[in-house]
Image (cartoon, rainbow, N blue to C red):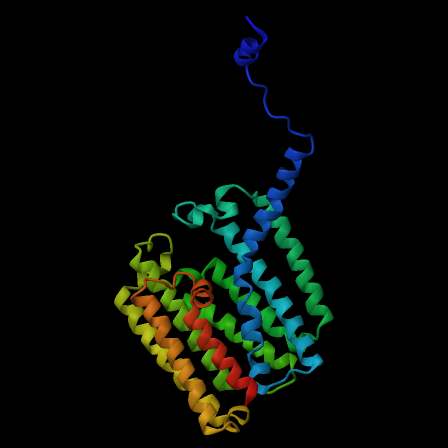
Length: 312
């Protein structure tokens, strides 16, 4: 056998792997899983809602910005704690869901013990942040945690109550935005946030019902697509009415010119119509955050709304 033939017949040696390559990939697996459990794509809703009072009052001094950023950090940590706890408690149910079974804890990518340790670390950071801030200003964060504990263990299984619990968390975000700015909360803006989030919550449940995933979420047994449609319509009408009353009745809104009020209300109406189109015709709405930030038309409407408030 020639040397060339011996080289061809010899088995190929396995690729050389440096000793540090395999452990490095193994160490990266846990941080990646923790990041997925934290759901960073959901963090955007914290600064958007918390900054609403600052936007409507045109408060952009350094102190106001720092206060809003601090409140945003606290609510982000609180939401991470809630997401982690939910994934720990729901891991068996998530394994029966076609999409949620890929979550790190449900899939086994992240161990339950590691998840509990992560939850403890996040809770310690959150407690330290609340202590460093004024508890009188940040009590909505604690209220959010209490409500979501009740949600995790019971309320998420109760029809209609589940949607109101989620929406209440967003109203608390807007409320903390007022408190950290030492401003009197606007009931009309808080009601606008509450009803708009009810719209998104019922839209999400409508989407889940239309895909036949009612067995995964027990609360869906108390809904139907037609009932969810009614709830969506009522929530949209209430959100628009409260927002219009905010502009007309509140000192921060009543001072705006008629033209600016018409433009911002028109932008809000267009945004509502576009969302309903995505929900009913486009079969979207399963993930409200991805729906809102993933549609260019909605982004343009939101940008127009923000510009009107900033220049008025």
